[in-house]
View 1 (cartoon, helix red, strand yellow):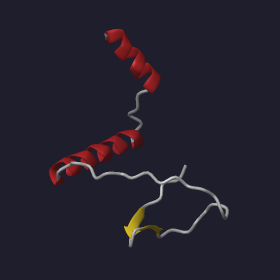
View 2: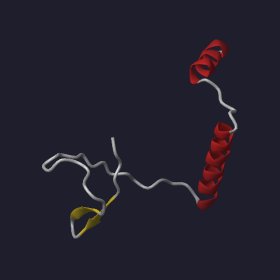
View 3: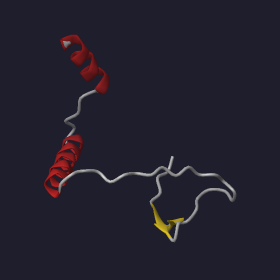
Length: 75
């Protein structure tokens, strides 16, 4: 699946990207409402994501199945 960004201009959806699909292909557009993050919250989110990527690069990973099994065992 590929995500594309569109804008509404004069009541029409406008996508400013080349079509990588065959002519006549149907696509489904989903309206994404804006989030309610403050600039401070957004900065904290991005900082957390950066730390997570640094952890991944350093090999500090946990297998998701093992983690979920541990969580299930604790409940």
